[in-house]
Image (cartoon, rainbow, N blue to C red; front, side, top):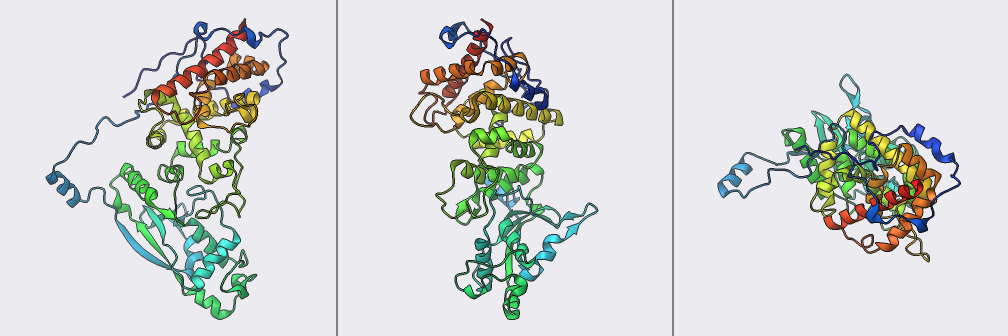
Length: 462
């Protein structure tokens, strides 16, 4: 069901974004000699605030299904089970470690695609240290059981590695002699040796070991939608090293498509990363899943769990938040559905999304820098941390000021907007604190943010 988008008022900018290369030229603008001071702020009641952003052509999204599940009789449930509805079809396999390299390098079809896809963006963003890789090798040497890897058959005899990429990568690197063993506990004499340097009997002992796999066969799903649902179900229930996958780790693997790829790319935006304090990557010896590392910064934890990718997705999904009665409660399911639907948006919508995101993040970075997503000015004795409670409404409103004359005016007088935001956070500190996530709180934060921006523009025109 397509809702009628409300035409933006004169205070709102067009949703047609300007390419970032043309936007960035405004950073050297000279401040005008006469600027209204914050003390002359226009009262919010007299400021015309912008309406919700006009949706793009083809940006059609229904937050919930119309056909809710109804109660079923026992006969209907029995029939559903007998027909195999929503039942996973699996088989098991064992791979000799001696053929791991051959297996991972094997290609298939005219396009020469790898038979086993170890997409580096498919799972978690962490790399095992050499010591952890070495401990895996020692486990095989001592015949200690190693958890199976999980594969999904995307096409007949072509597989995606759902869980186990680090194990397979470690084995491949070991057989390529790319690292020497270190940190072994029971075979300390082998520390410092590569595969080719091991005694012959020790090499043979490792070569005769196997790694097990569980394969979700293509017959599991009757169509792409059901395949995504089943893959998501498996991901949600998979544990690796005793630590469950984060929602975005599962989402990134299950709902792969153009919008998913765009969120991954935009999470690398330099201004966005600086405003959240997110590093470009984790050091190999940091943040191994299943191990507690108190040394990880908040930004490193976000990167490790792909929370940065989820935050980008939130920006695009938030454009439709006004239609969601539950507010931010159960946001994970809302994002799942939006990503699944958004992957089917046109290339033009995805291009517009990218331009809007880049223009908005660059505007906020140039005005607010690292404080952009913090409640600036609310506590002068402590540095505020960036929060989603601020990020959501700020990005939502700022996207309508990210191009054109309003952008230029705000950049030329950046202190005006900052002062209005400080005053707004101070006045409405309660609704920007804690975990106030119902629909009413969301609407109030949006309104407060709209008024702060509108006041800043009104002051500059006074």
